[in-house]
Image (cartoon, rainbow, N blue to C red; front, side, top):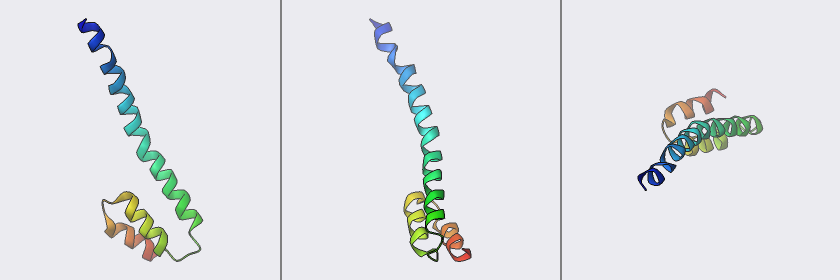
Length: 68
């Protein structure tokens, strides 16, 4: 009985480690595609989108939008 309870947990832990290590990479690729698509517009819309997606440091995002 304890073996049946303990079996799914390593599978779930490895799945969540895989999921949370792959997800930021997908977000980064998505941001790069958005930036490349929005490069003709001068940075404001893509900068706001990057700020909403990342959320952590809006200072560097606005600096990127200004330098672009």
